[in-house]
Image (cartoon, rainbow, N blue to C red; front, side):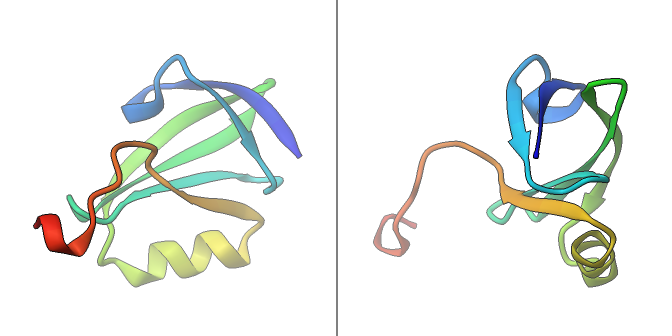
Length: 81
């Protein structure tokens, strides 16, 4: 497990814990976006923003030692949409 501060993207400045050795993929299903953070030098560094529908990015992250989490935020039930 790795714990460190995120640099860039929606988690900038927040401390995050990841079970993946390579980094973290943060997904935001409502907006259809995902952010890839590389783990290096004791912190998570934003690599790029991707469209969440790029399934290859999610599959590669899961296979490559990355942790995949949902973007923290308000939970909206299907009835509220």
